[in-house]
Image (tube, rainbow, N blue to C red):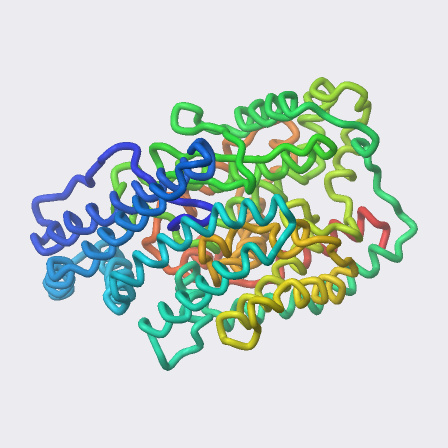
Length: 516
């Protein structure tokens, strides 16, 4: 997943075991592709280091390192050796799994071959430099610092899309970097439906006489205690510390593979719920990565099925588990022990964790309902940026207007507005819709798991997550990228991808919370 919220990087070199009957052309293709994959993994670990441990002055060298590695990866992926191996493998007699591997490598190869290596290196170097500019601009709440490099990244990504397919909507081309199979039309349909159906629900919540509690509102809470609790909950959820770690970053993210997958979070002294939900969200990403087949590392069968599925895993654990009443019943004692002065029972903590804030400006702290309006804002802005319908210098004003239109609030400064997300500094245009697509998918997957497993509430209340984990491993993780997104969902749930389960879940849950 490049250097976005979730990068891939190498922890160990493991090669799939091939049978004697495996066609030589297929073996040759995998040998070539593993080199590409390992370079991508190296980019991932350098990107993780840049955001977590690199000294502040390390940026200029890191920019060159990342640019060189990205260029080498592109060179290997587009090499004649890969093209020849793809042609030969395409003519060989292959199994269904092997044909899926060829399909995925061919998709990557063809997209990469259309783009000049110099442009790939330029995008990588500019993105690396943009990260530090974004961090400084956010600290100063000054979009004007970031605007020139954002303008450059927009132009570079337009050029990138034009090389791949000059006759198509450039934003649709970029969206397929993150979700190649559901299609931008599906994303637009889902976003429009959620906007149409959630806005009246949000308004009904706002008009309700019910006020949910805020047990943390009057205190400040030590970062160390928040970290200790985050580590305890990660352990309870089943995070494998032998293959992972927890660190702090300005924007929570996950980076890794099935051998080494690391999560980061952030701690706000006045809002410990923020760290808890962010940590559980990143656990979902890490649990997915760590559940990919180890014997298939370096091949598409050992890689995740792109961003919508990845977000379904993080949103499932964050919301369907981490924001559930049974979960808060299981950790209420731990929360009270961690934070002196907080004497809230499980029901109070549950309702607090699901409070709809009518003044929330920050996406990563948003409740399940307003969250998707945050995504709609970003989607509409970046689509217009890439399609040339919005100038970079106008983004803060448009951002603020859309927040007022969709969320009824207006940012007071750029840090709590247009600069709050890291994604554009990584040149990740087309990423944001996958958060909503993943949330919708999470509800559908969780409903199917409940049908198969029975009393999930009781298991979560008892702190027992093994059955749910095993279901996800069996129905999602073990397949890697073998199936297209829509096919994976239908195999796991027995139904085509649909927003029905999410809307039913949200309506029932918040109707109960707010007595609607």
